[in-house]
Length: 315
Image (cartoon, rainbow, N blue to C red; front, side, top):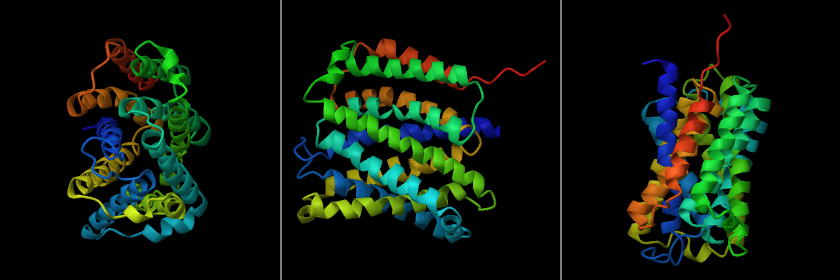
């Protein structure tokens, strides 16, 4: 299998695993049916990255592959902090708060958060100098985001500006804009450390643990300390699925994929994420599939094809 083909497949699998995140976060929302006491936004952010980081660290220890782990942060401390503390930790807290505290539903949150594909497309041009097929990429991202908006609103675009939803919706877009820096700066770090074996996994482990810093600082002010670690078996099972499958494995697989293709190409599969989330919201949460999906899916599919179209070679 060609390296590029493998990269596309891995990026899609990573995005597919992310598609369950909003559903799990919604299920863990305090007060949701079957959630028990629920898990607060800040606590859930900590569990997600701490347990995800521990899982990947155990994998690397089992493989006896820790060479270069310390060198990675010594060589790029500024990029590591910016990408992990801000791009991952702070953006994730904003993202969870938008869904849990401000009531943005799972499939709506998936649609708005996926705006990071647009931001990453722009960031990768200036930070990574990924300038192939820029016009097609721009058209593709615009068409893709239009498809997402149609799915989100079911053709009633005024719903985005509803007073009781606007704060949460803005937070989801803001979280996506900040998270975009994480994946772009991550690939920049990969390029600067080509001699470190499995640099993608080691970067992911570091970023998970560093992202816990702003979360731990915020936790005492969140009011969630009394319930910290006080959860039932079903809640811990969902936390494990979010931490290990959606986060640990998902990001690891995605970063392995973008080592061989443009990050803007890999992230284009995220345009499919709201469609996948809407389908599983229907299956798992009994949410109806909107009629707009019949328009949204073709638009998003065309967008992914445009973004990943190979440039023409000169004669």
